[in-house]
Length: 183
Image 1: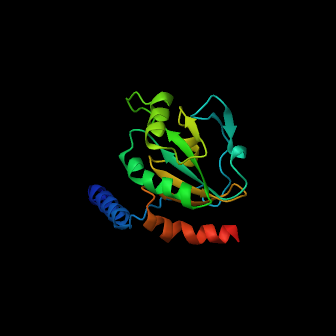
Image 2 (image 1 turned 90 degrees about the vertical axis):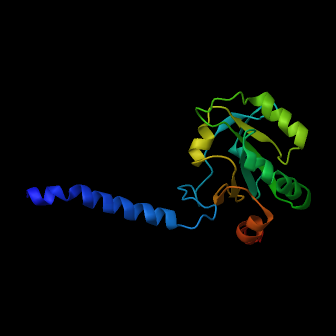
Image 3 (image 1 turned 90 degrees about the horizontal axis):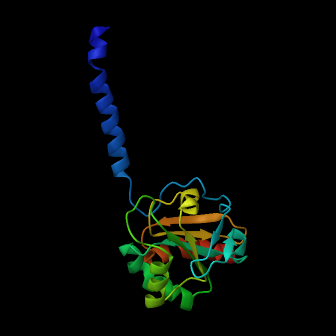
């Protein structure tokens, strides 16, 4: 029995190592597991970034739309911004924003800073939700910004993309599903 106990740390280390390698071997394609995929968009009641008007998921239009999670401190959000502006101009899909404030992040990133940034670089959003306490972001399982969700007309989340939304990602992941949703 003492011999078996002596090998427990080695066994634990081997299991941990195998698990780690399996995790690292996964292809990073911007997809993280989401318990909400093919589920209803979470209920919320939050203010718009642009005003004090409170909105809920019911205020999103009744056709497929994108919800883009963004933040002023997010460099990758600035990288994807031109493509979001392109989508706003050239496609018929509505884009809503979720201004994400990372919980515990020491910064002076409030409503005013976010509104000033959108005023400066242009807003691709119909409107942006201000999630000061991060509740909606937590309900969505947001890991950070940017993240983009494709939601169908029934309010069901169809795609979750973590990272920059680029033309390549759009073509590879979103176009086909969006066509199917619009048929």
